[in-house]
Length: 262
Image (cartoon, rainbow, N blue to C red):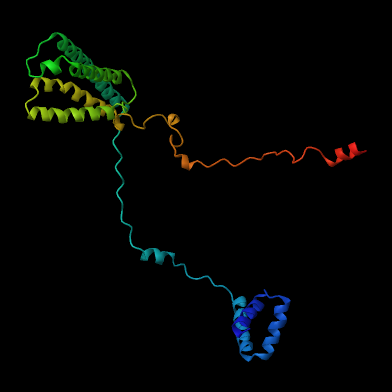
């Protein structure tokens, strides 16, 4: 073993962590190695000086360190989202629901009138035979009645109409695109486009009623689930297998056999 390994043993000897065998072997090595003997004397002197020296409290450099740090950049506080007063919010919601109820009633009347015109009326435009009195005309009228009934339903309830917004958005978006195309190709009358104004106004009211500012805080905290309502089957941990009691490999026992043998 070289001197480097012996000096590790000598370091343990100075710290009092050596074993009896290591102490005997280290003393035998020191008697024959002058370099390790000189290193051991210097290490013992340093260890003795470190143990006998008095610890002196140094200067408190906290203020100096803090003064050397760059000044923090002030961050302006985020402006809170304006929240309407409960009384004012209630008046706005009541007004919007009243307007939506009126629009829903007009939309239902428009759909019923369209059904009556499709059955008994005679139309002047080119598509009167196939579209005006056919199934497509009745389907369009049914959509008008359904949308009007939906407006009335939302106006009568006090819950936010968030579930109706996606369907109305798709319907209104498609209707606007088709109306622009029909207007460009001169395949629709202006009076027919004006009748879509009730639908657009009702859609705007429904979107306004679904805004969070009109219902700050959302639903009650007690109605919110603690975790997500859906999960992946891969996230489920398999149940730990339980203990099973297996029957013995053979029905009898040696004691029973001995008794019968007796």
